[in-house]
Length: 65
Image 1 (cartoon, rainbow, N blue to C red):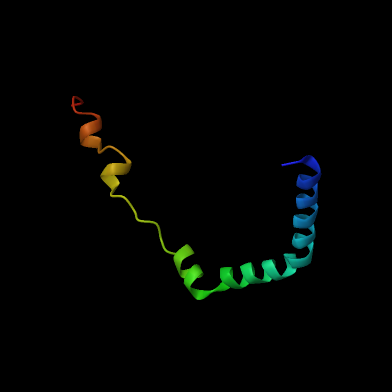
Image 2 (image 1 turned 90 degrees about the horizontal axis):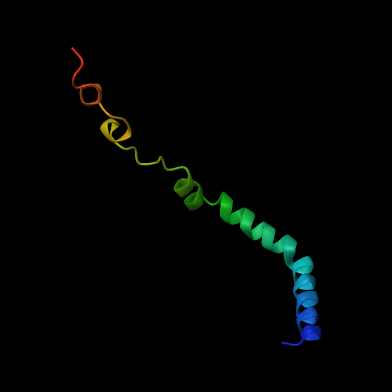
């Protein structure tokens, strides 16, 4: 692609962004506030059992009397 064409494409894309930015941001805001998205984002993480996170004391020090 020639440099002048590439510069023209960049200028046109910047113009589209300036023109449609408020609409794009309002759509994104509505999507983020939707009930489905908030439920998905607020779901608790699956917790691993304690023995996976840390080694039990009886296995960590087997030869201590």
